[in-house]
Image (tube, rainbow, N blue to C red; front, top):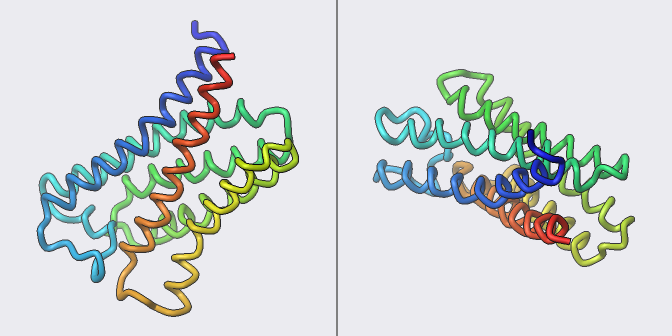
Length: 199
């Protein structure tokens, strides 16, 4: 049976791995579909293209969501376990990973389910970071708190601008900006948690 420290390390490893798997699978899906346009498509359009494209995208998102779930439910929750605010933020991140799995299961052929889970994912993820930034500040981890708050802002602002200014016809660009910022945060916090398990 895994020890508590062993479980924490497993969660940390999932945190390092799942952003790499995410962009790897999305990259394969895009490369397999030359018609994809960053301006005119949503990333989810890849999920309904037959063959390698849809498999790489949908199976990839489900796998990434599962890895993210282990990262959040084991690693992140344990790291923030001593605070109600931190646990709330970790639970919100867990919810975001479940929604990510749902995006992989319910592609665009499942309307309106796909739209609902996608929208909720891109709302829940920045909110979870915002809540966690508050806990980090209360713990006097000021630099990490500021980085987490900025990450939540960067993850959210492309969507605010999209719905107010309509700067692109479709949502691939705000999707990838938001996902990239969230992934960078996961790698940074995973490194922080890794250092904790080594002490």
